[in-house]
Image (cartoon, rainbow over all chains, first blue to last red; front, side):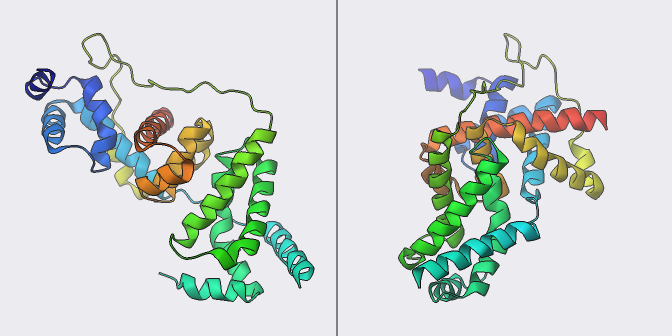
Length: 88
Length: 192
């Protein structure tokens, strides 16, 4: 009964947002993809929200970590040499 | 893709250059992941140093079943978790529900439009730079999942295994972390 109700009722924005994580990861069942896309085609706010999530994920993929400093590398090489000296 | 087998063989043979090349490739990402787990940068640095020692000791046991990166991250997270036990930690409340909806489920405060500005390369580069700093605003559990999934690009099953969380929990943490970062980026985008 519950599932039949879910299938036929249109999504509200709160529900659409809740489905977006799995949608972006390609893990949303086909039935829910159709519902979400129907909602998105009619709702500019949720479409904008989804676009902003995509931009956020893209930015994360381009976020470089702090560069390795010469001092940090020297410290680690020092630890390496000490360890080698102790194990040989 | 680099030949990890050859690199591991050189490490086992005690080749310092192989060690340096590994440090150059992975230390920045390892430090970032350590910082997502422990509170202070100093402790995070100690954790990465312990990790490299464990890597040297354990390289003979590396079987190549996972990628070198996943293996390094696994050792690092184990070290970081034991450091967390020693660190005095103040609880930080999880910030969720950055989006608000009314009783009918509609937006109370709909998102202002800025996503299309990311088509501009300069703006996209600014966002990438800002999101790096904003990661620090996430609670640790969300930050770890976001770093491993969206920054390092590891698949969901490996991330769940590395962090010892269920697949469902990982999805929730990722969703909340992304939502929180979107909220923070939106605030910056609207003020720039």
